[in-house]
Image 1: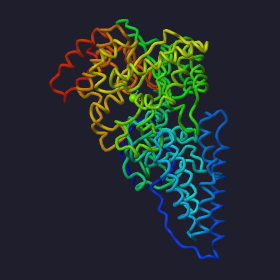
Image 2: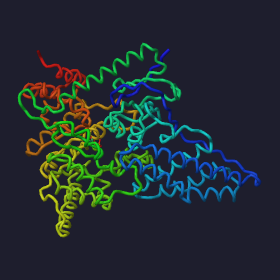
Image 3: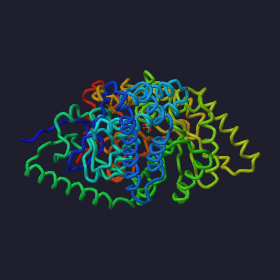
Image 4: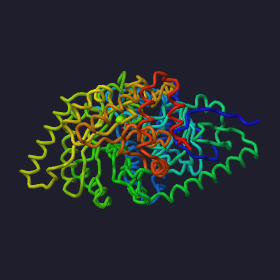
Length: 577
Ligand code: PEP
Ligand code: MG
């Protein structure tokens, strides 16, 4: 008898494979006293666990396919290096010898001491290193306790597996894909989390918020994951497996049909050219993108350059990364967003130490607070602008003071580069993301001071509706069609028209073909999305007439019946015969 579990589908696609369960709840560590005669045996047991951890990690390291991004390998190297660290190895050995504790307890005491130091650090980046310490220590604990579960970087190959876990960090999502998993499902997390965005980006079918899944599904059993419907089917009968194989084949066919649109320009039936741009997370994403007919990159999320590594990328490394992307774009613009660290991109859940990370020190706020993080990036972006059209985009602006501060820093950086004889584009386009309701309402103030705007609906919806985008408990309130969200979007689009500057949308809403006609009718002419969404959106654009949509959407936006909006908007997708 099959069992169906429901979650939220965040990345479409069907996977049929074996469940690989990752249990990561806190590891229970018990204290016990070791008789003095057995102390050296206990020390030997501890040191053996360290060696086993090293072997496990080295074997993962060796199996990273050639050509994998260097940051993935660096992530594992960091953990291997930690196993040589005296803090992790020597102190527990001393504790076992001097206090007669068991190895697990000695390691736990040291873990608590190290983590305590990390938590006192003000630097959010350094604080995230705490999670690396935890990962390594948890691995050793599990070896000591002879449990193999709980580590994404386990020595088992994930080839074809459907990974089931509590939550997934963005860094782990990248790693998972590289380990050959065919899909993942989490018990927690929301559709707008960066892990969900990455899953779509690497086209890994995924479901979030499937509560209790690890209770009902056994490790190794065959299951089906449907990322479109947001369901997991355990114990499927042969007829269900056959049905999903058929759906999988249809999905492949649909993708093949859409692929034919790759080189068709995006032009409406009444001849309006629409700019379709791409969102990228890593320079490597460009390879897939070059197969599309895009108008450039509308959002380059640079924070992914900063993840999974021991030290921050310096100006030179960033400059080289950016120019690598520019060189592949053949003169099309590259919109580089300045660092948007913080909230769920704090890496591995360190947000728990900040009571409300989404409302805290993230994005431009963090950059303005930590100029050692921000200024090298501004210089790198400016220097890259000498190689091709670059647009510098500032995330999460909430008032014009922040904007002035950033503009001053940019001018200072330009002056310094000039003095140093380093080239940059003096006319570099500078834009801002409108992601905070306050900024949307004041869009005119930003539009007058900037060269372009881009609407980040992921955050705009989160902040407008007061729902944490990674909290699955409030996912049901996520609603791009909420009248207030639509009104804010309209304000921004209209501000662009009034001031004559381009306005794009780069949140997930832009890549959702269900909303394409609505947005065209609201006057949006620039869309930026992950390349996998482009062909579907383009199909809708090429089949739409803006002149027909504008009056229909105008009427719809005046509606006093918000409950009817989804149905009315759905009706836009069925043009009158
Ligand atoms: C957004 O908020 O819509 C956006 C594009 O930025 P991010 O998802 O990276 O926060
Ligand atoms: Mg955002």
